Length: 461
Image (tube, rainbow, N blue to C red):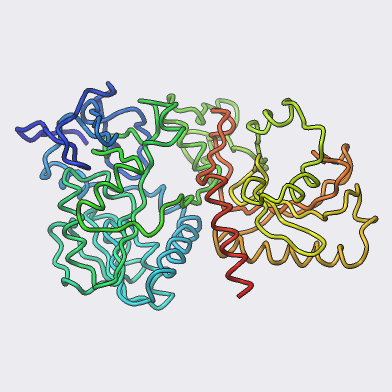
């Protein structure tokens, strides 16, 4: 954006989440923007339109002064980016997971996606039988959605769009609420759109996460487009103030390619993956002619897991976890999600992904060769049931399954055979474990235990 941002005359005196006046200075940031500041794929991490203030009452974080609605509208109208379009496969997979979640609460009916961008979620919803409408201020994105995907899209913002009142079963606000100077007014508008019993699905960054707290002003959600940084409690406070009751809260991982994530790292330093090549022909990353050569990144994907070093190097208990767990008669404490006659399923407390299960026989034997036929059969049937439960809770795109038999094969507990089931999503391995020594696991073990035991119980009914 070439022109400077025009600020409203007033500085906000109250928290936008709880309306408290207990705002205090929180964080100084880089206040420069740039021409790509207002596109969805911006890499201006650590930059914002003003320094950040924090509410001492609810923990909400917001800009210390707000940009004008008119300036934001102009910026979003001019925003365009082809990088997001190139991630269509992953974004459609993400959209399907969102729709799965929505359809647990309302039947398919009428759905409006506000700030729908190029319309991948709308296209998936339409294909599932929803009656859809999109709202999108960007001329580029609205044109793509209507002309390329054949979707009905209104080019406007939420507050200006001409939408039927009390006519929608579901309203989707994906990565929107944090961009709006008046989130309470936006939720009031959404409440007027919904039919009785309708739901709003919101996706936004969590400023209360461990990663956000550790990275501070360098967190990748501190970008020029974000006016607000909600924590889960501050978002719930705002929702309840506007008459909404949360039905579910969790993390919905977005599916991007490894290359996309690695290129996002470019926001932390200048041009990290482009090099001059003076001796060979200049080729672009797609093999065509170009002005610069891009290094082809990661010819094979690896599952980096440095966070497991705590387990590898840490002290090991003398007892076998697969023996003491079932005998403790405290399934929640041991994360045992399902018991059978011969085998049981438990969550791995050092997981590669959320929902990482281990299926084990009760008998303390090192090899499946020593299992009798009933135990061997139940090991497989319980694995099959685990796949169903994981699909119901997490909607993964695939699984890693297998047995590490023997220490040389990687068995962490080599004397008690067990089978691993790890749910996987496209691009679920990104740069965080590699450069930050941090595995982003969006759900606590307690919540995983609750959701999976419920899924097992539902299947048994």
